[in-house]
Amino acid sequence: MKTMQSNDFTLTRNRFGRLVMTLADGTSHEGVVPVRAFPIAAPDDGVGMVSTDGRELAWIPRLDTLAANERELIERELASREFMPEIQRIVEVSTYATPSIWTVRTDRGETKLVLRGEEDIRRLSGSTLLISDNHGIHYLIRDLLALDKASRKILDRFL
Image (cartoon, rainbow, N blue to C red):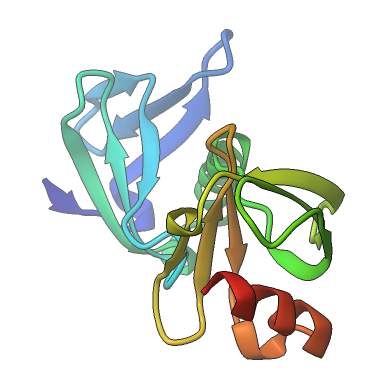
């Protein structure tokens, strides 16, 4: 695996929409997939380009060091595969016992989720939480202290 700079490779899409990575030596890899090393804590730091057989072909220390075309293609590919709404407010919960139905406002709109148990709320760091619903969707609370008082009060009952 090699740390890559903008001039070490080019990225394009084939006619099926899959990413094709062409290295400076002319070697071409079809169907590469970008994978973030730290998707929550440092989403722009450390992205591996992985082949269809799971081998890491390249390591990109920072996305902002890439040429605009390559960065845009990688960001679009990541956005199409990653789905982690960020909770901005907890509107209500059906009950303080689990399972419970939560109505939340996220950065993608209002939705309902089913919390199966308290173990589905994980603390990632001091003020960052990850909540998994019954469908396996992960919801992020980036900063617990940034939530409104009512939302924090609801969360206190589950933590």
